Length: 166
Image 1 (tube, rainbow, N blue to C red):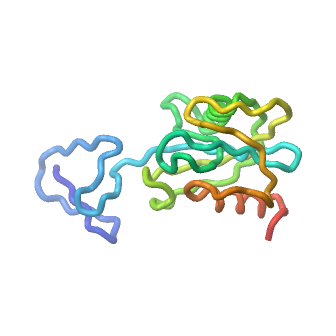
Image 2 (tube, rainbow, N blue to C red; image 1 turned 30 degrees about the vertical axis):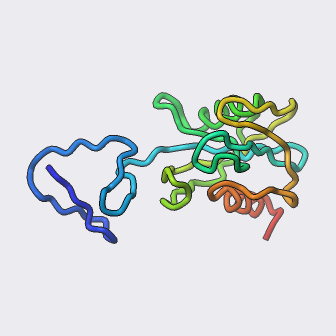
Image 3 (cartoon, rainbow, N blue to C red; image 1 turned 180 degrees about the horizontal axis):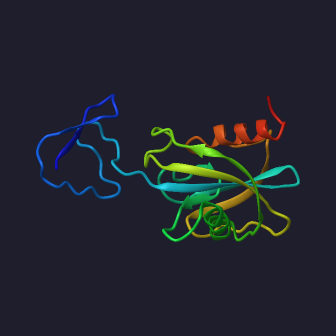
């Protein structure tokens, strides 16, 4: 079956009855959107009123500051993945806090990921960048650097939920 998306609507037009296999990451030749989108997690790591950020070592947004995070493995939950990604990128462990939200705007990053965000409460330790992070540091919410993708929106949403920002 050959399926061709009608751009701007959610219905599909069937051209013929041949089976079409779509691979993760493939893009539509007409609009450039990805057929199958990856699911990622991001951690709003907090301690003593500060938020933990990493400097990205890979695309998208290589060299920009971001929330620690990454892709879900096939055999783990989002809550497990966010703690794993935090440990891989910063060397820190924490306790799962509140659910912050799901961010799915296809334009949020060039890989069109759907991201699940959790607060992670970190009690101690010094961050040490590893995996695909080149740096990891604590920032106060009023002194944040320019952030990758929609991470400024995620942090603004988080601060609003905590009653720290209007």
